[in-house]
Length: 297
Image 1 (tube, rainbow, N blue to C red):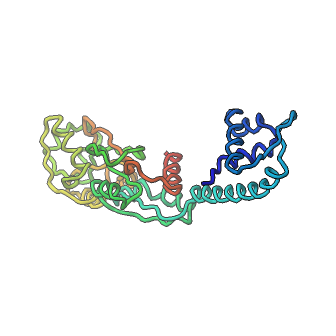
Image 2: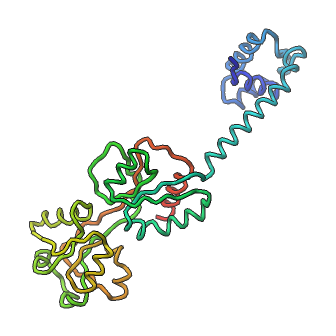
Image 3: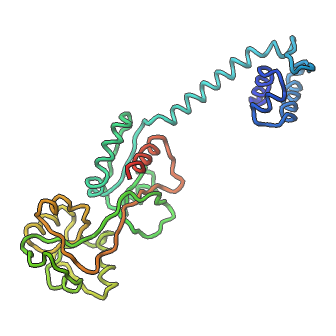
């Protein structure tokens, strides 16, 4: 079997004309270089160098005979390695991104557009699902990267590698509850008002329930909704007080359609995490996307 490393040592010694210089270039010891040359000479059954006082000189019936072919072969192999390296550094193929519709809309939309401009050859597949489904997709290789509402229960099949956004859950109301503007409202007072909450079995709802329970307050929703956008519409129309991330209501708060109720104590800040499958393959297209998120954070 051909040992390419031996030929690389032979070629380097021939080009440098010295065992010492070849060892320095190859980052190995001089005895190791000398041993490699001897091993190749044994395999080929001929002497490849004349050991001269000034250095190493190719033998006419050995080294000089094979040097051109060895040089050509190593250059060809170097070209193959360069092509593979370039392939790894080129953003091509398909990038499958999993997240909820809300995360896509409020957190990832601008970043996905920026990534498309940076890597136009990558086909982007958006998988809109709730966090538990995204976790399953990651673990079954149906998704390359997922964005999850945190916190979530520990799962050995995934790794949360980054926090991409912070979410501040707040209480908002429309003009129908204008008497609450400008005053501090205790959490226990919310029980006197109709509450609009996200439906059960969601991370946001679990965070709200835990918050209320930790304070010993029982808060029952008057209406459960399936999306933040629907909640904002109902709250704007005066159906009750909603609890949602401030980051998802910025426009309506800015335009005065909604106002933030100053509830004390405030709810803890949550986050959105970037999740990968454990031991996930990391093609350049995925690494480029993650690096873009980190730069813009």
